[in-house]
Figure 1 (spheres, one colour):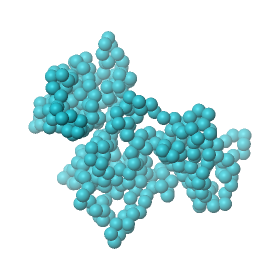
Figure 2 (cartoon, rainbow, N blue to C red):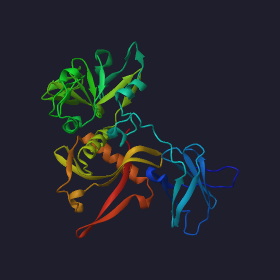
Figure 3 (spheres, helix red, strand yellow):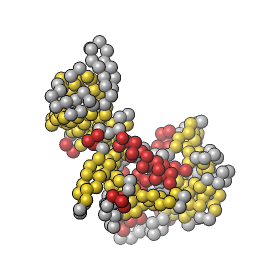
Figure 4 (tube, rainbow, N blue to C red):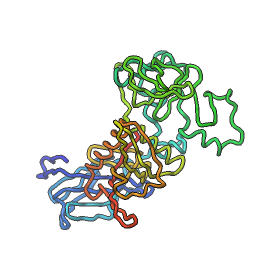
Length: 381
């Protein structure tokens, strides 16, 4: 919200949610502030820019950032306008649709839940790290002490993991498996894919290498300087988790949010088995913690507060599933480290707290009880 000068208009603190429904060429908007009443005057709703609108309520101007840009010169129509106490909802229907990301070179699996460039993928690294000769120059360092773990100058070639569930899809795509010697990777079809020699494979939340400066102890890869756990050893291949690393390039440091680790695990399960409901579990100091998460929608574009979510997910969650009476018998369980558990739960809780009140939760009946699920959004970057 901002004060509009020279127009005798005031600005008040408000909450809003804008969510795109691309198949309907519409954006649903919900605004909450104490100036809205069932009889208040909605004087105008107009585009401020390709990525925002302004709503004039009585003498108050409300700015709403849209989750995706409108096409230039687009005509909009306002539909389903409804006023309540402290609440205003309406839909923007666009005649020519919204600005779309070019998905012509994206696989069907990548396209349904991300914008085509995953954090620290080969494409992302090429864009954000400097090139020295014919190689990009960067290091993956320990997140705790910044000791170099993998130096790009020591890697012959980086490859992106084709898909987190490539081996399962092989059963559908091929009657005869490809010749190992004709491909870039060493493969077996028990679900393992390994780099050759000094190559590296970058997955959605890990890096596979055959060697690094880390030490191997009891099946774990730890930093050679501070002994922080970086990942695990899988058939003599080191699997380094991105959220235990920092990307260092040209004196700039980039981190990988631990929540993305769980985000990608959820999306892998959604894509592989169409599972949408999960118990997320983590053991911390001999205490096992759990929360329930239901992936309601994928590929979501939404904006609220100071946050814009592009091609993220919309979730319903409950932080005490066993006490709430949720049926968890046929729900998939995902075990994650404490850092990942805490970061993901903190982010969806914080995002929930800045939504308009009526958008923060839903109550569903289950057998003889009613269960409250909180609603939130989280992005893939």
